[in-house]
Image: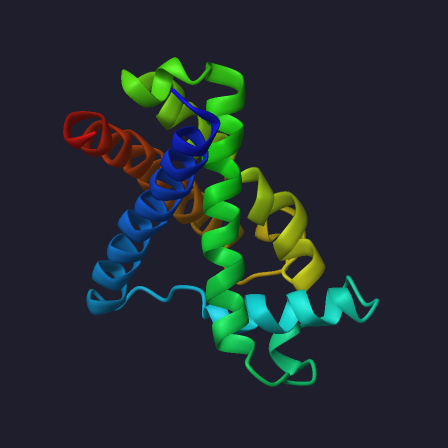
Length: 163
């Protein structure tokens, strides 16, 4: 597989997996489950670029222009980065013959980003400890990222069959 084909595959797999997660989040919202507003991710990202990493509550931080678009871009960029990490560790052969185990593993490992980095920096505490229901939030995050891992596998499988 050429370098260009590998990069295109990684981008496609990362975007596809993130899309699977987004569909899952839409289903949850329709069932009345609160999910993250990606505009807050954008707000946080812009504040990080301006030198402020930690907030007491990102929702109360100064809004920034284009935060929703920025948040969605960051969300998909992170999905692509996790797909790249999966391929870097598993090897490019995984793209051509994807297996479920590594994809689910990376999906579950990816939950460390929100629980240990983003939520604390955005004011929710480590492992959502500053939220009303930390355990439920951690479980929900783990399930969401398990869905992302499933999306990594399903998207890679689709592209392996059509490629």
